[in-house]
Image 1 (tube, rainbow, N blue to C red):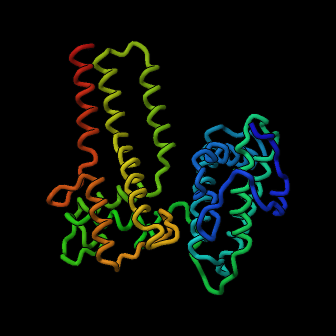
Image 2 (image 1 turned 60 degrees about the horizontal axis):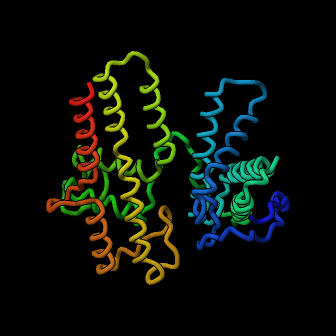
Image 3 (image 1 turned 90 degrees about the horizontal axis):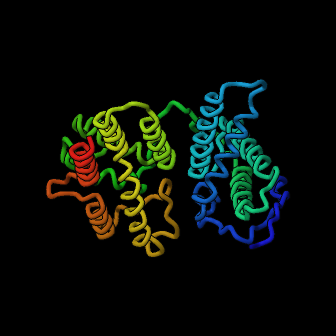
Length: 326
């Protein structure tokens, strides 16, 4: 095992490299896009939770800390992606960007406290967080006004990026006009709901979603004196509620196949949220559309069927339980 070492130069911006962490391909080193971010995420979340806890001057209920931690985590990613896409800081965004940089500094300080000698991956996280912080510091100022972060606003999918391309293809059966323009007035009511649901998946934290499902199941399993039929019925309701987690894997598989086609032939790098796809290329557009149809099980009428099999399996499983164990 490699010798554990915390490079505190990260806190002053003098750290040049990490022996283990590979830089992301894009010019803006966004911690959320690092190749090993999945391994970094639990430690980053814990650091954000600590920042939230220490922001209160007096003891508060744990639920308040949790809510603030979730809000800070969402703000951290959304603002970072915004400035990555802008490649600049507008005049009215100076205070917001400085606050974001300060949040990254607080996170670095928390991560560097009381290091765990058995966790050799911490250097990668320190490197990634500091590189993102430095990238924000180096953004040029730009005159004019840009959007400020609003936690209550609906996150917008960038035009021509991965989710925009996929959702447009899946929305075809719901278009009112032949123009196939993806806006609410050109979608049937069912289509509006469908697009809203898929758009939410673009920004859903699937790990947290699975945690919520597990917690809901544990509540039922810990209830006492439940009749078997009530017990299995409640568990079935939970599984059906969270069955749309199937989309996480489908979107991931689709993105991976897109990346194989697009890089390096068409694009140097392909980020899921910020890289526009060259949709003007008809051959490429057709190829990518075929990938969408394959993974989302699109039928001859243009409707996707991702949920059919998961729902069928859940209902069959609980029908068996109810018939044999209740």
